[in-house]
Length: 166
Image (cartoon, rainbow, N blue to C red; front, side, top):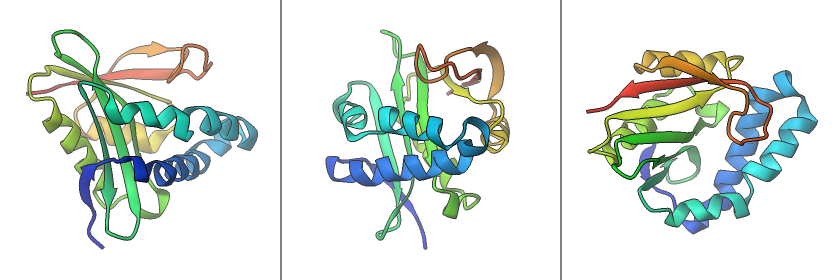
C-alpha cells in the first residue's frame, strides 16, 4: 500500500496518539521500561498535548496515510522570529511499516514546509540506534547534548543534531 503525506487534522488525533504510544513502547520499553514509557505517552502524546499543534503558527503537522491507516507522523515548528531555525519535535513511523521510506517522505515534507529556514534541529535518544542512523543518513550531525529531551524535566539524555536546509 502506498502512503501519501497530508496535513494532520483534529479527527486524526486519536489515531496519532495511538501510533505514538505503540511506537514508543516498541522503541523504548527495553530502555526505560513499560511503566516509564506509559507515563511519558500519557503525558506527551495525549489528545490534550497534541491538539494545540493543529493551529500553531509557523509549524507543520503531517501524517502518512494509505487510506486505511496512518503509518507515521511528523511535527516541526519554526523556533525563532526570523524563521531561520526549525525544530523537528517528532517524526515517528509505526513499527509495522518502518523501512518503507515513510520517514524519508515525512522528513522531505518538513524540509519543504520551511523554505526560508537555514537549519533544522532535533533531539534524539542515543540508545535509539534506528533513529540515530536514520538522521545521520539524512545529513544530520551531532552538535551537542541535552539532559532533558522533549521536556525540561524529562531526565532523558539525548544528542542534539542539526542539518542545513536550502
